[in-house]
Each structure stands twice: as structure tokens, then as C-alpha cells.
Length: 123
Image (cartoon, rainbow, N blue to C red; front, side, top):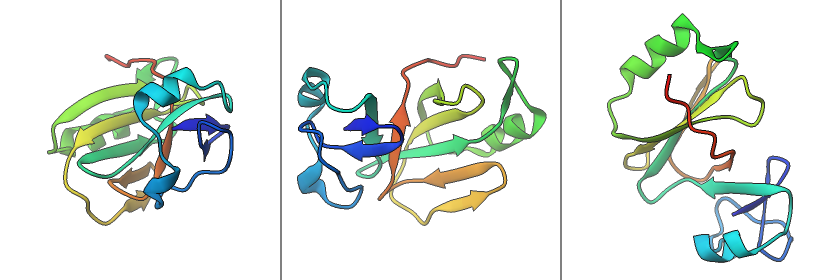
């Protein structure tokens, strides 16, 4: 998906929906489009994400973030720094399940758009 801020947009620049697959596009089409100001992904179909807020201080994980990461049982596919530079997106391979939210952020596996940066976190 293309993104305008944290909102999903189609490759034509119109509003997209995290629950309406007809507004989604292929990765190739997204890469060719210049709509919006970046890219993102729709979760579901086996792709989940732990969206950890405020878990990086000077590029280092907080102890709370380490504890949360240690509880992840699904295979981790990719971890990136979020748009703010202070959080992480941990993308996982998992079945769709109910969302969970807390002061730390959230865990989602369907019906959610995540704005991506592509900035890999390896710490």
C-alpha cells in the first residue's frame, strides 16, 4: 500500500481501507506509484505485527521492550524502526487473532495498516 502520513492510500492516491481488499495493490504497483509520501502494509493472511511505541532510547531497546519481544512465539520475519524513530514494528508469521493493546503499543494480525520505513533494526 501507499501511505499518506499514517493513512493508507491507493496507488492512485485515493483513500484505502484496511478491511477492503479491493483498495489494495500488489507490491510491484506500490513500488511504481508516487502517490502519498511513503509505503505500508496491510496485515492479515498470515502477516502480523507487534507495534511497540517508545521502546527505543538513543537507538537502544528499553528493558520493557526486551521483555515483550521475549514473549513473541510466532516466527519473526522483519523488525524495523517506526516512523517516529522511537518505536519498532516487529512483523511476524502468524494466523489472524484478536488484537491486543497496552501502554507499550499493540499486536495486530488483520484489519490494520502499518506505515513502514524499511529501516531494519538489528539490536
